[in-house]
Length: 213
Image 1 (cartoon, rainbow, N blue to C red):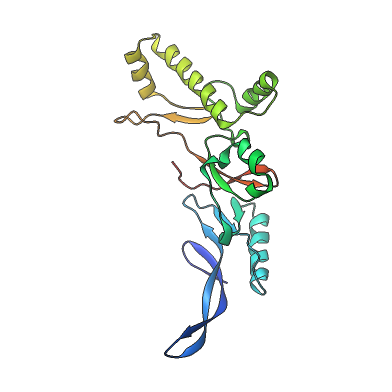
Image 2 (image 1 turned 180 degrees about the vertical axis):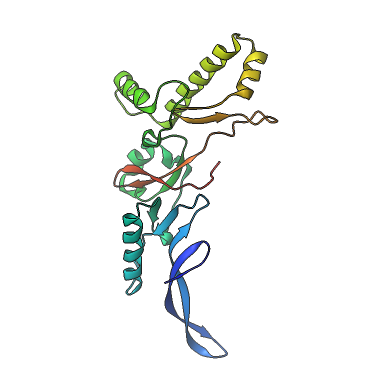
């Protein structure tokens, strides 16, 4: 196995043809794991031939033993879809959704320490009680908007748009949905971070994201 700044890899012999020398055998890198921007790792889950599969097992075992933050994806067959972040995606595709990666604005098992409003457990429990199903990130985001509005009203002591906007521009905190912070120039939400999920055996698994905005 070999390693550089961003990738751990092994090598595989590949026969190439060229008119000048005919067939020749070259060693090509086969990635075993790559390092993401947040220093977490994404391991290659594809079926590799011997002896590369032994290197692969050693890498995965070492990551598990070290309790490292990592995800496992077959590098040769990565499929991503914007719609993959919601349950109806799997409901429609069934087993065809297996392994697909997609963005999600919120997942209950990736909850944040909420300084504004209730925590994710409270929201999840009450949503299920009211609607008899698990909430999607669209529902969580809508509820979080209400929490931010309520907090701005409390701090501003006013319902005037200008006062609320000025208060929101100074607000920097967390709801169960994630961080809320507006850019001082554009007033665009820059605090929230998008999650990355993968469908594995009919449920969503969180993947390391690096710095996705």
